[in-house]
Image (cartoon, rainbow, N blue to C red; front, side):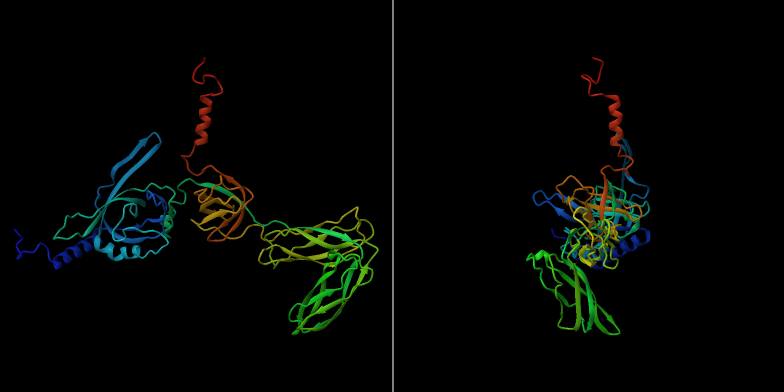
Length: 472
């Protein structure tokens, strides 16, 4: 027999009234909690196991604490592994409020992370309970209580357990929440130093080289650097050909050649070569040179290591050792590449003279200016070792002590770990530092005492004996 059509089991207006009363009740007697949805970063396709997830969004919503007399669950349990906290809490939130103010944001999360079932609260999401300043994980969502009052459901009942941290990424931008997990999980330590290293240059000596270039006329109109052409060496060896570059300047709006510096003084010249200054934007510059055919001087240099960490704003000093006995010490400068932060070329203002094959000169380049490292590592960003390709996640970074706390060591890597001496790079901050040492042990967890336990066990049992458990 059908229901009596003259008696309603719940009209839309009555259902709307109940929902409004529940919303008002929660807003008066409830607690403002923070709902933190779980975003799936990586999931296996076969058994759909969640390999990694993160919590980086937060939504405020009012909730009624059903367990108002205190936390439910098993409470605090003393186990052989220490104290285990099994606190639980049951919260009731409005179905309408969740679907209107949280569900639409979860549904439009985009392709960055996988979000399933955005229309209701999900098991695995987190709840920040402000009264106890604790994180709880949603274990079960009861959606049928009260049971179809006036033919409709109005609330969600969330059964939550105290959250057990397992190296998930929690970055909600709420300091009160994020700081709770900065020291959680297995944390290892990197001691860092600067990334810069000093350049290394080798000078070569020879005879029949350009001793000095004299600029007899600086010309005008050189808005771009002109080309310096020098006649080739009679030896026929391309390495013996002299070369130079022009340095321009501007004074009172007039662009002219300031000086000409040698990049290769040449070898085997018997007469002074001809120097031509070629440019399509200037004219009038004239230079001559004098050669030295009786003494050894530094004719060219080879950059063995361009170094790193140099700045074009602070050119390092280049020095050469002087000749033994009578002679003159070579003088020169270096150029720094802004893109590589290394030495790009060596320019000689004077090759010197009086050197000998028995006492080959050496060159010394000053240290880089940014040898202390570059940048500031960001919380939760991925860092990568350039040599080992080992990856980890930043927990905290102390600029003064250069101590970097990390977790997730080895993610995305097939190697054993970080290598001292390799450069460490942040994927977000682009910070670059060199690893001085790597401590594999977690020295911040007071319960991580594996070494102490092992040493104490060695004092009790000596496995070098045939029977460590007795006297025979």
